[in-house]
Length: 150
Image (tube, rainbow, N blue to C red; front, side):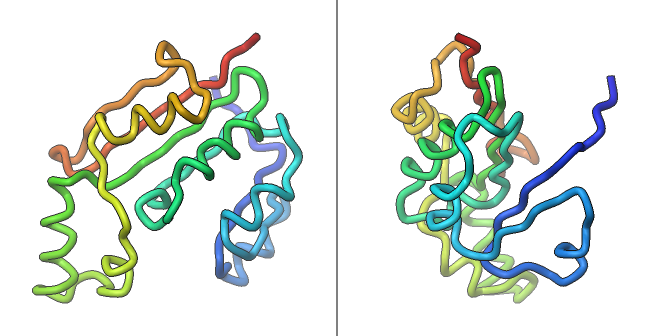
């Protein structure tokens, strides 16, 4: 089943002009911590935090805020680098110069299932509605957490 986007929302601290021109999207320029509280509760079917959590000082607060934004049955999708990935990312940035050093210097955390799962549960997601899996040779961790229907 293919779904069409009726309306999307993007949050970033700096947005490219071509993104701002997209018709079916509303963009907020600012930090995620500042922006999430301004959004309407229970109004999103899905939220994606791709390469975000590792940059946050308080990932729990952001995940808890996102859970409140999700509609009943809505889904949170997360992708984060793992502890194994840390070595490869730092090699790429600090020794080979293939990726921006400033991004790696901004990483505050790396994740394993044992790190991310408790944060999701503390934020209010039910364990039975959380799926975690490693991918890209265990260099990344992908999580799907669904908000309960009741």
